[in-house]
Length: 204
Image (cartoon, rainbow, N blue to C red; front, side, top):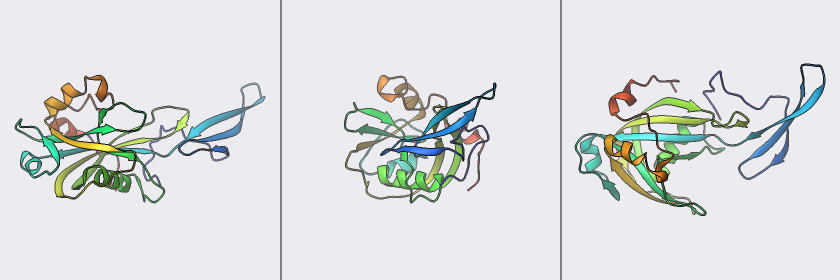
């Protein structure tokens, strides 16, 4: 369930009716009055929201990681996942995934996804970005900054996931983001200072 919805978000109208239910995508339709007074049927897709986590560890915290490739470059590290999924080539991304119906809100979903994909529990969380990739799809992507490692447990991956953990410097992440396999990585946040200076959009 969403707690924070930006004012600019384009969502499925309350009067819309669901005409198709898919595994991920649903289709909604509603009558829309046009400028000349005529009516037309509009439609929109709906799907579960997505969460992404920029998990940042200090150099000392990164050295504690198990089952992870840790860069030898000094300074803070950001967690990148090297992933394989059915019908997809190998790619790099941040930890994250779809919200579940059991998630209380987007923050709960982010904590769950980070724990499942990396085994990491982080103490500090800040919502730094919300995007709507397509205006005709009721789908928001929430990006969180997570800092201060509390503990690492075992990964709990879905049957369709193979995920390796890489802890790299911000400079290395910037270079990696330039490759075709890393199209999902942020190209804007190239330092911890920029991340920390990003305003918090909503306090949970």
